[in-house]
Length: 101
Image (tube, rainbow, N blue to C red):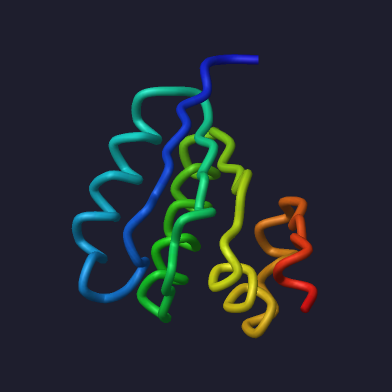
């Protein structure tokens, strides 16, 4: 297995941060054979954020690299679930005790 970059995103994945986040995702993908995304601190995600995640997954596949979401915030989990995208990303989603309430 090759080198893996890990990128933790703490900002919201919204239209307001889309260009900045796209550049961060592209740069992180360029520098390694795979990318692990930590989205556990993302407080809000909108359709622009979902498009960024889909872009990153497709770009990784195009470059023959891996992209794995290793941690989901409640907002990310809810958005992926609502849009029926959990299977598309294929990453295990851990539901915390706090989310089960």
